[in-house]
Image (cartoon, rainbow, N blue to C red; front, side):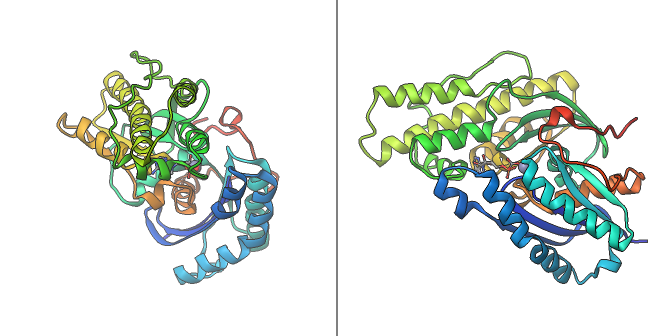
Length: 339
Ligand code: KG4
Ligand code: ZN
């Protein structure tokens, strides 16, 4: 029998709802972005984010249902992002999901946002376990060893800034708007990545990341050098991007060597980066290691990935109480799938 999961995602600045069949077939995936508003302030303003989620969430859910041609009665379970994320924003999705679960008498499933970024791969590919997953987003840079659909072992994270944060902060300094990753990516396409040698932090065989030094060295560079023309800006973007991307790939190589896997998943907003997508394939494919990077719309925040992981949790009877609460950081993730 088919299983239909309604996924809801409101952890940051995207309000999203999706209907996914059997954990791998997207019937709808509606994403309403707040980027235009936050761009005015140069970053996400949490109070505005929660208000905007509240204003639009019911409309987004209705759209997801009507596009999927399913009704609420057809839905088997409601999966919602529980954390990590902005508490006020998470609360909007969680209260909506709880109300639906209660009124329809259907199970509620709280989903970890970062693990859901990994589960996005199942929406487009059949992938063999185990694999290494590199999750690169605005708030996180994590490497996981993934043994099964619900077995995620966190191997490393960042000591300071996340990769996406390094892109966004650089874009702010360079006056390129928010979020900055895509702007830097586009300018870098016509720049020389070897022009400026930005550091490759923690360039050893560890799995840990650190990106605050790269950002500082960009600021130092800008204090000592003029941007005289568009080409200078493009060269800075290309060199800066290369330092981040090379670091991400080097750490993934370390993890692959250590855990001897044949498959890699790269996901999260920064996985949209065109240079990262090319370099990852170049680096691993001739070594007989398959690299899976979801389509860009499934790499950035979306509810289809929440429904995908929600499906495996629901199938294993790992559901949540109606009194469950959001968590802001990955460190206090209150659930363990394996216990
Ligand atoms: O996963 P995501 O949509 O939201 C979080 O959970 O944080 O990731 C957003 C991050 C932002 O930092 C944004 O600048 C970055 O992903 N990003 C990119 C690109 N597209 C989005 N970074 C580099 N290159 C891109 N093309
Ligand atoms: Zn995310």
